[in-house]
Image (cartoon, rainbow, N blue to C red; front, top):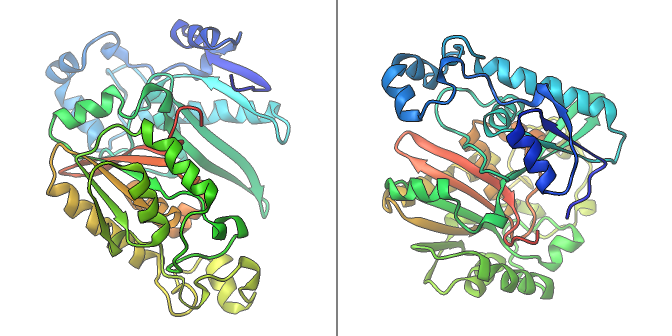
Length: 369
């Protein structure tokens, strides 16, 4: 069981009982209630669609209207969630942790607010029941920073949630993005980029440990760099297709260098302090170039495989960029709001005709974490 310094829940029984079943007696607070749905409360989605279709369409178009006529608007729900976060942070000393047991709609609203994801469109999925979303709070250069370390971690429920399975059944492709296993360069904190290391002993063990928990795939693709395709070959019984499109960003003259070996000159400042999207290592790729080549491959592959589950083994920077552009973030937003991916972590997206939707981020590849 995970340990927390204190545990809070919504005062609605389904949340408080969940905390108790997990072994905690929560401090119940109304601020963590699900959004007030007004006249929609207790109705099925089909009933809401048939009776309140115009109101539902306005919400889907991004209007901040009150749900069910007399309920809360999405902005009000996310604002209340932010207020709840503020209360928790005021009580939480540095280095301590809190567990909040709350509701899917509220978590989604809080995530959209933190990441500045627009209400219009379907860029972010609804968390599964009993899933974990983890946020880290810090102060950098006098400004509050919120990092999304993970979203919708439901590894304990199996490789594919009922919600994701429903999208597959409706004909929408689902993509699992898997970061490769550990390399010696990861341990040494080198800029790997296009430098071609294979896995170390830990990385090979990680791939073997994750493989039994993946489930089956209709197709598997991998970056052509050794650390990625070695991971894919160890994990999948399905045929694996290698592609340059899923490679890590090209770090140019910095490929293979230790972080401490990179000169702290004006170019370094432009990239890591001012966050300019300049070519990495002077002669490498821009973040936007890497993100576009990977995004194009993902969309084209998904369009050719409707209703299929697709595995893609790639790299931390590439997957983080793909999740970021799906959420509407540029390279600054990704650095500021998305936590670093762990080796073997899985992030998932559903691809709709209107565009992709992130359903999970940085989830361990096996239920033990």
